[in-house]
Length: 389
Image 1 (tube, one colour):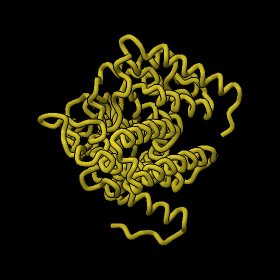
Image 2 (cartoon, rainbow, N blue to C red):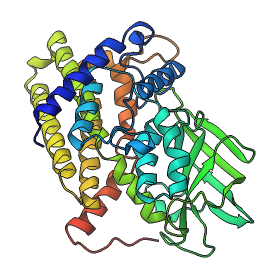
Image 3 (spheres, rainbow, N blue to C red):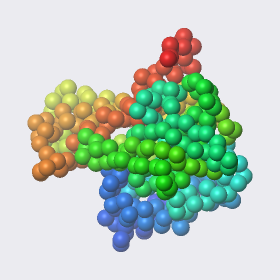
Image 4 (cartoon, rainbow, N blue to C red):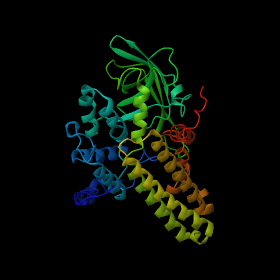
């Protein structure tokens, strides 16, 4: 990606704004939030996210008419990189801004764009994703949550699981079976459902880290308007797959800056406790650095492609999830026996322990590593399709 003088000016503007605004009431939010840490100062991070929006730093690539700023791809990449480098807190509007918003822009009606995009840009409505089910996680096409029409509304029955931030979301975009008797990826629809209504129960799932950012969500006759289908009824699989491809897009580069910070901190820890003198650990740290460079180049190559294949997004997901999981394991090796001790009772974890425990899920959520390998094998390498139930 070739950067221009205007891009350099944009980078300096982003950097200055973050330096000037991550102060005062927001100064203590640096480094807070993110996977495994979404419980940290949620209300304060929401206020920060709304401050970003009011200052014009959300939804940069969206059309201006829907609250965006028509930013170029390079400018979007620059913003995510500078945001991560500043150690700014994880944003609470990620699901709406990075996943649903671009999906509605691509597949939504004019009315849906007008209704939902401005509140996402303003961070006045928060979203969660209703994909996985107890019997349909990586094999999402086997989902059983159903929706039937009752006059002017869809009536939804079923259960979703691993639903990030469902406890604070105002809306959920979910995949449901709307054609009775349909199988696999046919007969599914992509519905937009208000969360604050009778018929929806949210139950937190306690994780290895001791926190509960994931939830089970039960739909027992929950309702949403008939016209709140993104794309055509029955075409939900195509729309849902587009959302997953978007999820592995530009913001992943900012995520990688965060990974670089983690690796740099781990190298410092290895120097401090002498682990860097172990040739095996030193080699693993070097390989981790190389892997991070490969990850960035792969991501930039995909973004530079006007029409990347689904397998390209799967390659990116496979690379970053395995790298980050392995970094968590490497952290435990660098810290040695001390990594087994909690900071205090009953279960007070340090950052490295939390990284190790939560990163175990990286190769599972958002599409498991096994599923990504299958997509790559079939769509990129032309190998025979795997048998499915």
